[in-house]
Amino acid sequence: MSGSTFRVGMTLRAALAVTVIALALGAAGVRAASVGWQGESIISSPATGDGWEPAIAADPSAPYVYTAWMQYSGPSITISQRTSTDGGTTWGAVTPLCASCGKGQYDVTLASSSTGAVYATYMQGNRISFTRSTDHAVTWSAPQRISGASWSDKPWMTTSANGQDVYVMWTTRGGNVVVVSSHDAGLTFSTPVQLTNESGIYYYPNGGTVLPNGTAEIVASEYPEKGNNTKITGPINIVAFRTTNGGGSWQRAVVDTLNTGATFATSSVTTVASDAAGTLVLLYSGSTSVGANGKVYVRRSTDSGATWSARAEMTTSAGGADATQVAAAGKVAGQFVITWMDNRGGAFNVWERQSADGGATWSADVKVSDATSGASYKTAAGFGTPYGDYDTVAINSAGKAVAVMGEGDTGQVHGDIWTNRQN
Image 1 (tube, rainbow, N blue to C red):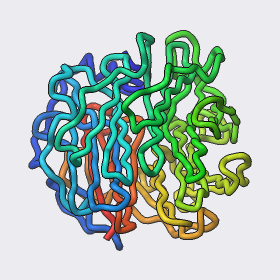
Image 2: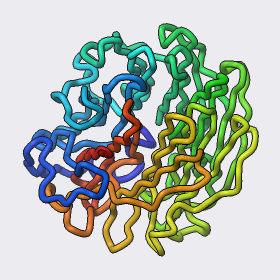
Image 3: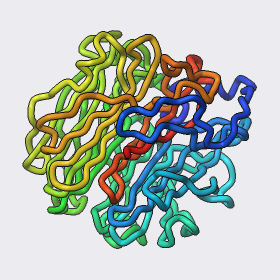
């Protein structure tokens, strides 16, 4: 099955009967909310199964925030979704993204637009589907397959501010990158185009953005791979793909090279965000030598991704901790928020930093995973391990960060999706 969905622990999940810990939906347990944050709570459905790999999107001009995730219930996997009408403070009921699509739904991503539309991509088996909603996720269009008949994995999506231009990238069999584009708000898509033709690699897409001038940037970590084994240790290229002509052609740039880290679960993740002024922030994790703890770095670009600044480490407060699970969002000119996980203090937590000057300087890090109980794996120190391959963060219409993150036990057997909102 999917290389990304089963990247860590999923073969174990398929082999083990998971004991579900029954928790009250949305219960946060004991918490002392971090300064400036309302306090985290569970947003997935712990009474019916585990939540895995969350997506988020915020309406840029209205207080709607959307989140979705892979919901496990025994061996069944579907995409669940919730909507907030108050900027991420409270959330509506859990609903299926596609109730008629059957089981085997993976790797959801979300995007929103200034028109009020919200878009979703996800895997149905090893095919990529796209759907859209124009009534704030009350109903969704019939999913359309955009990947053709080829084997596909790990989709990621980005859109222009008005939602007219949509780009979806994924990994094809053999580990290379494929992309499609739409310039009519997702009504139709181009034929899939393979951007790379390499061997011995496996790309993990995890970010994209469209600038005000129309330039689109999509990014990925390029892992070493051999045969069907995507857990080979070695160097990892941090790669950015850029188009200035609506997807007619793309340029590939290796922005940095790091390595696989202390564990495969905490190896490299790469994402990108932009603000209203067109400044780009590239956020990525990885280790400086094979097997070492991961760190988190930022590079910025003020020329639409043509060149990038030197890297700046964001995990200086973490000391020797292992860091991963990066997420980033931008909004008005100069505004960015980033999140990541690290295990300083002996347990994992989610941390955030913010910038008001386009990524030139950053605030001190603040703990976002501030609940100290509420699940079997939560303690005052934190939680056992990241639950899934990625987390996401958005900035709502009031300019406040809303984070969603997968937190679980050390064996990645049980976990949930948690959320927190900046006050």
